Length: 282
Image 1 (cartoon, rainbow, N blue to C red):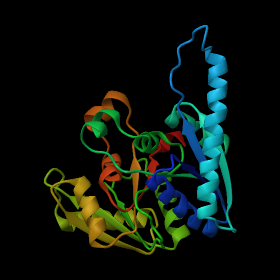
Image 2 (spheres, rainbow, N blue to C red):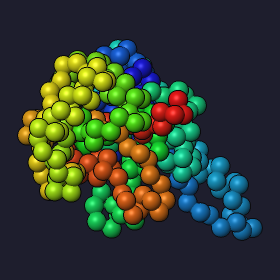
Image 3 (cartoon, one colour):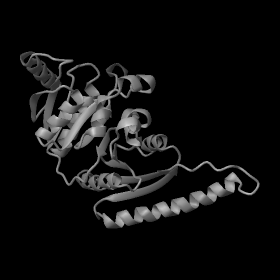
């Protein structure tokens, strides 16, 4: 986690993400990149208000005000041991953030989020939700201020062995970085019910196959996988939930949803996510 990106809209969750990123950057001896993305309003092109001149003036003014805000939070939450780079970009937030990740070789995106619910969750979503679904690098979602340390990581898993290699390697690297204990958990629901003896055997096989260390095996019963993950995390006072996502898009995403996005929206812990890659394409 040497290069940490914080998409910053100056909301309380974004500031919380920035403060946590500073702590992580101290551990990794890394750099924190603050990025504010501005969507310009549509302006009619007339003889009296040419789009080009008005756009340039507006951009200069908005950029200057944004850098003033960056200076304020950098001064208030200053850490002499961390290099902070501030940038202002204009464009569509999710697309601009992903382009920035690629251009600056970002290792992880840390995003503040209020979560989402109801109509907004299903039809509009949030920039955080979009980034979680399509980011090429891991994303960590921060809601409340978190002082750390990260000592307990919940890793819910459906126990499939295909397309897990990249995800498991990243989860193990995350565990090693924080020197944390890993809680591998299977959420037993009426829809996917299996006897505990059978599930325990599968969990042990999974842990052995991927050479997990410093971990415990858990089975948690609940009517819903999403709520089960969150309640299990709350039960053990977990600091972070680590999950993979298949990154569904379009109609498939609307109809099937995403368990990772549901937990991201409704969970209270730190949420770390990574898009699962197809092993055959590696």
